[in-house]
Length: 28
View 1 (cartoon, rainbow, N blue to C red):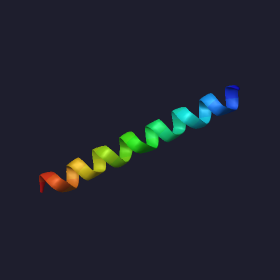
View 2 (view 1 turned 90 degrees about the horizontal axis):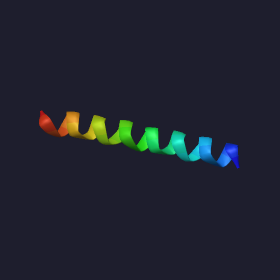
View 3 (view 1 turned 90 degrees about the vertical axis):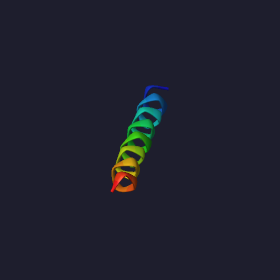
């Protein structure tokens, strides 16, 4: 159960990082 939560948290962080990077590239 804890592993699943950790995996979900990691996936969420990854999505946020990708979104941030995408917006950074789009601003240029």
